[in-house]
Image (cartoon, rainbow, N blue to C red; front, side):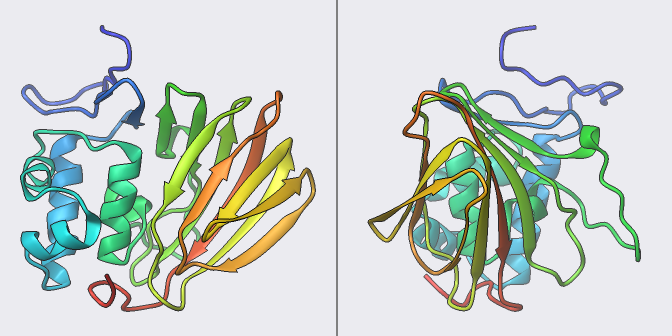
Length: 221
């Protein structure tokens, strides 16, 4: 199997499975099919009453690319999927996994969605997608000197919390850098552009919680 491909045991013949889509970034999940990802994305877009043209403008992702993703023909990069989720007013977790219900919802490690980049970083989504809840809990590892990039602003009323487990994190909020060391934490309003970089020679591990306001989809951009 070529490097970067993700195979799902017991998958149906002809079903597209998420694979590496460029030399930078891939979405990886042992159970993730591109067909299911595209169907979730289209359902979220239609539920918010957004046309493909409006979503393309808000996410800065071409209409043709959205068309291909929604039909399970192309896998988006992590940054592209994040931009689509942000434009929809939702989280990547909701696009990557089906909703789960129950007072208690276990999420074993092998069922967690993981986004990896060959440049040396990993984002592990540790929260389930729950009905009516726009919340995401992530654990991110940045290798030495790795810059994960800059992420778009979320809807007004969004909140993000970051706590560094190990190493050193440079968090940039609307162009202003903040240096965080192991044990440090920070809160910021999520309606800002925010970037994550490890400026040191050892790996950095941090947790990020994203809490979006109810009904934020379709209301910004």
